[in-house]
Structures are given as structure tokens and as C-alpha cells.
Length: 105
Image (cartoon, rainbow, N blue to C red):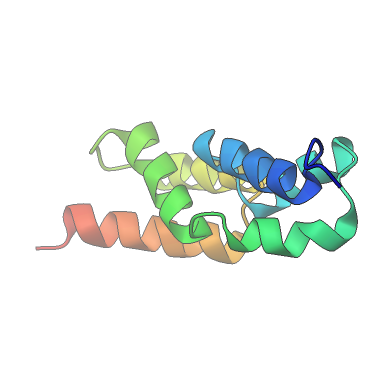
């Protein structure tokens, strides 16, 4: 009643923290569950997170540092994105965007 505990604010801060660390939506949901945040607050908090595609692309830029990855590196990066909580579709799109942005002439 006095605002000492703001569960919605905590959920949003936790999601922002996860996004700042480069984690995807699934990892954010895992963290919300692990920290005991009421499930009713998850959607609103996750809606405030940055676009997962942009986060995945940033991860790839940091990982490859402008270099051209071979097929093995691309598969490993896609698996790493999945472990970080990104959907396969987000990983595939990010890999395609990375290649297009850096290597198409």
C-alpha cells in the first residue's frame, strides 16, 4: 500500500537486467520464475524488453567482431543464442541479418 514493494517494477528491472546481459526472452522468463515473480506480471515486464532480434544481432556482432564466420561458427553461434534464451527463429534471422549487413556487396 505504501509502495515499499513494487513487484511489477521489480519484474521490469529484472527483465532489463537480463536484456543488458544479452539474454533472450526464454532466459528472462526463467529468471522471473527463479526469483519468484508472480506469473501475472511477466507479460508486461517482457513487453518492455528490447527486441530479441536486435539483442541477438548485437551478440553476433560482439562474437564475430566483423569477421566472416564459417558454417561451423554459424552453427555454434546459433546454439549459443538458443542457450541464452533466444528462439531458433530469432537466431536464424539474426545470422541472416549479420551476413547481409557485413558481406553482401
